[in-house]
Length: 169
Image (cartoon, one colour):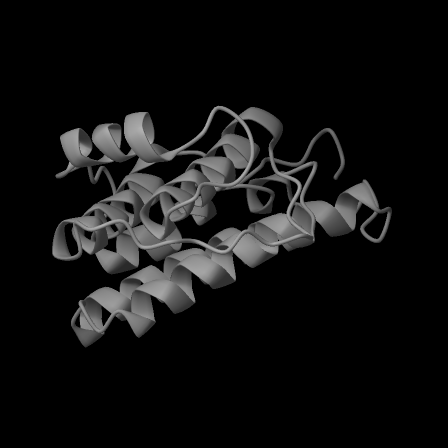
């Protein structure tokens, strides 16, 4: 990207605006805090599905906001797919909510893969669009966290999570 080019940061919000969720804030912060405090370990994967899902969302948020997805890899892609599939399999959410969640997680993954392609040298500095690296506002991640909280509220008993050998994040 040439120094004289102007970055269109608003393109980052197209999906969120389309879904009407720009500025969305936690509805279930207290539930998420309780899951985080009781089911998410200081390091490594959680022993419960509820804890692992929240941990994965926060890993995605942290990678985007702290690193601009510069460290994107298969673990982060797995997190997007795992969260999406688990919430869909729960049959808890209506079609509109599932579509919103699916589109958001696909967008997070698309951003990460774009950033990963740039980091791997597959996109040149002249061609790169930095606005496509990462979604860096809380609204998207808060919306997904609320879905995880609703999942946990719906099934308050711990659901054992089978840790994956290939996950190191």
